[in-house]
Image (cartoon, rainbow, N blue to C red; front, side):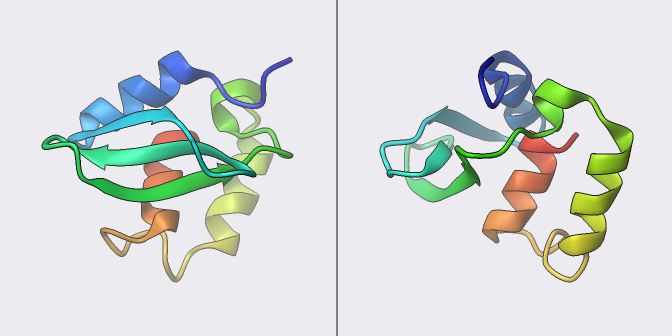
Length: 87
């Protein structure tokens, strides 16, 4: 079973105006790019499932509580992970 759903991740990325591709960085799921192709960050640990696969509301709430301080700061990796992998 894959650790993330690329279709859901791409759909979520489109909503916030970025593009995602499988990561070239070891241990990460996705690389996030701006519309002009500039790499912004890498997100997601390949060893863990996320909401795009599990659809588990309890895990989603736990993730959001864990990253409450940084997940709303635009431009941070946790912002992109929250919007792309956990919605």
